[in-house]
Image (cartoon, rainbow, N blue to C red; front, side):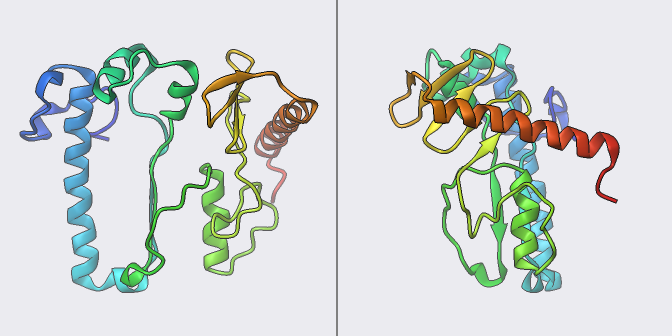
Length: 207
């Protein structure tokens, strides 16, 4: 948690030059995540030293965005994107997912659109566990690129729907598009799946 918002545990972060972002939230975040990276490195080195990593699949992922929207101009300056439009901001909310196999087997970069709900389904396949009643997809054998968000936004890897502005975007061009009947159906399907998820959780329907 020392690397968690509001990133003010700077006395523990050590020296890390953030240049013009010194004394800013983005600069403190960079210091915080640099500190976290070092601690994670120590942990992984220990797994190697003890031999645990030889028999383990290691999964690392972020659980939410880092920089709040009120600091988007600061983040845009760091990334060289000013101003940040609504689609760019949504795409900047992506988080890392790293799955490491012993001996660096299967190494590479997979650009499939995915969400946290896909992690268990993916690991279930790797370990031959039952995942019949889960909504996520196996990222090594995906049937689609669908990802949906708690606020009703969704993407299929080609189109991004932003619920906060009720707008559809072509991801390849970044332009707004007029929704087709199929996209409108996709929107309703997403809301239905969110309702299913809430109902399952609220009433503990999976015993």
